[in-house]
Image 1 (cartoon, helix red, strand yellow):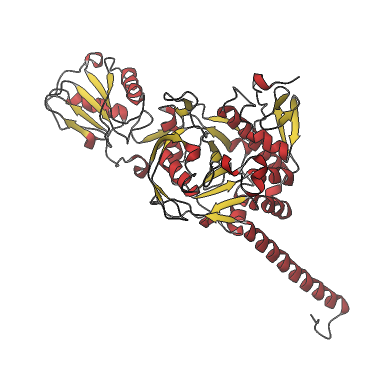
Image 2: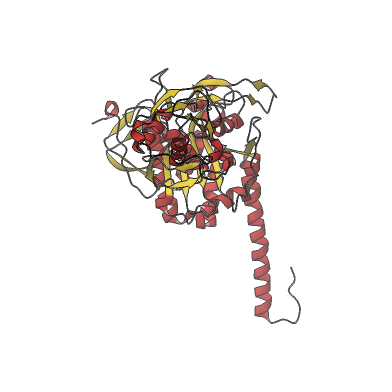
Amino acid sequence: MNAPKGLPLWLKVTAVTVSLLMVGGIAFAAYWVVRLQSNISKAPLSAGAPRTEAVANDATDRLQILILGSDTRDGKNSEYGSTQDSTGYGQSDVMMLLDISADNKRVSLTSIPRDLLVDVPACTDPKTNTLYQPHSNVMINSAMAEAGIGCAVDTVNKLTGLQIDHFMMADFNAVKELSNAVGGVSVCVSDAVFDPDSGLRLPKGTSTVQGEQALSFLRTRHGFGDGSDLGRIQAQQGFLSSLTRKIKSDGTLGNPQSLLSIADAVTKNLTVDDGLASVQSLLTIGSRLKDVDLSKVAFVSVPTEPAAVDPNRLQLVQPQASQLFAAMRANLDLTTPGATASASPAATGAQPSSPATTPSAPAVPAYDKALQQVTVADGTGIASRGQEIAATLRDGGFTKASHFLAAATPKTAVYYGAGYADVASDIANLLGIPASQVEPSQGLVGVQVYLGSDFDSGTKYGVASVPSNVVKQTAGDVKCQAVNPALVTR
């Protein structure tokens, strides 16, 4: 490039230098965009389930991203087994829901155990257009095996009542390359451990793991806690908590060179949905996380217990699980147990209405709550839900309240017999049920609260609350993992 004639030499040199820097900068940026873009693999977000919410703005809206770890043994992952170990699209070895608040002040990572029994909806394979029928009571990690990652997304949407915006699925090599890119991750174990299945071997105390040892730490099925998947989830949360602290302290998310290095390592082993399949989208989301307070990065576990049909599998603990999902739908701060907010009508099925009142009636003497006949008909389909509401009524003075299982119904109502209108009104007010859902019923003696699926959590209708003990740690907490006694080594 020729500098203009007649200018001082220093200005000519400056002009040429600036021009070269601009050209070099553009070439550098173009190189990285092309390189990262060519790394990315993509797949559909859904396997056929309709979406009822608008597409989120990655830069300004609340974002919910399903993070999956694939157990596929294809390609570079073949050293961890044969392709017979993983059929179809593979199974989700790890499943976490990343939730970023619109103001970037709160982040939660909710772990869903791979052994959790759920109902998988009908899903269509995007490659073959094959329709797979719904499955009941199957492990959630199998959701994507037949019809792909979109089916796993649809399953989590069905389970939680949320609508996930994006997904990211990484394989074994992504863990190794990410841990190498950040220079290792600090982990702590209560005792020296050796797991021959995963190859994990660590001394007691704090160690820095990367590459194969980082992968072994995350993969071990029996290394921590009681040797179950729940122990592995705690170790995964501890690893990610430490990784978050390291990236935060290193200023990685604010350093373009470090961010590009990590992006290059991860995108080589990453599959995302079509809406996230651009370098700009990934960098936008990364930049949103750089200023989050570590105490507001919450690692959450879905409440589970051994399944009644198979103690080697898990089922949701109710009503705590439904309360957690309602709190997530209401966008509550999960680090604040007991926090409440009115759930949106779309999330609960409830319609806004005035407080419960009944038609005017002649004045009658005040009644004794302890003598009233009150029953709770549980039509939610959630174990122990009727018991919970009956206990709330007893705490409110209706000490004779009882409950029983009833046919499923979508909408909650309060029914009352002749002479019980005032009792029904007070019960409805106690539970926050609107007047439009309080009705007389011929032949009924006393009051019956018929719970529907629109009242699946909390003790106030249409109000979500954060249950206690769902946040296992924040990114600011430093914890040692309890080693499974069977794998402690000397």
